[in-house]
Amino acid sequence: MEQVNTRSGWGGKLRLLARGDAQELATWLREPLGRGTAGALVAAIVGGCALYGFALGFWRAPLQGLFVAIKLPGLVFLTLLVNGGINGMLGQLLGTGMTFRQTVVCCLMSFATFALLVGSLSPIVLLWVLDAPDPLGPDGRVWYLHFLLANTAIIAMAGVIANFKLLRLIGAFTGSPSIARRTLFAWLAGNLFVGAQLSFLFRPFFGNPRLPVEFLRPNPLDGNFYQTVWYMFSESVGGAGPLLIELLPVPVGLAIAYFLAEHFKRSTPPSPSRVHEP
Image (cartoon, rainbow, N blue to C red; front, side):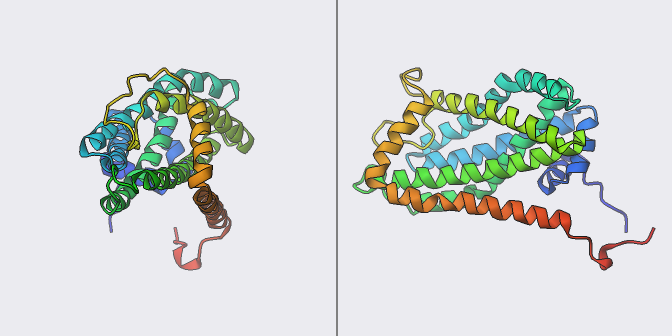
């Protein structure tokens, strides 16, 4: 039977990305960046983030869902634009041997993996939203806190998986696990710092029922992300504090299970039935 070339076309490239074979992706990374590769990665980010963003904002109002579907992919690309040059310089200083183009493509692969994960969960989030209480009703505020915390866990878990695959990709490209770890830590610190503040400027995403439906808040530069997180945490301790404690083990447990599964998958030799004669 003729083997199907999984690297041809957008569908083949996205299947290769979802499978996460680090050696194959490292080979892909060394190739010139064609329109097919760039198109597949951009389409994954736009499609996955738009679907998930619509599900997030739809509870507040359909218009809010449309706003978030536009803003979430924009947030990803703006984070990459701001940090692209910095990540390229850090990669060269840390010894990855990647060019600026390869650094950008590597980060695009990670963001595309994240987008595929959250996009695949968007139908579940949308069904959950359709069963939710009226945002302006008496139970709207409490449900909003639950919804926010649960989706924070989803986003965190998708980020863990995407960055773990990025770690394996850098390791396969450089041949050095220590360089891969240092590079990922440096890139991740910058992406989190920039992405967190940009998400604050692009708010709202979840659609606070106490505030009107808007594309952007009238005071985007008033305060910062970290101050807002602290205020939200302080408020949730009185009402949704127990829920936060209950939800905390979910992303941690899923992350541990995923890392263990990946470890055993790499350490387990292939079965004799899957070894082919030359």
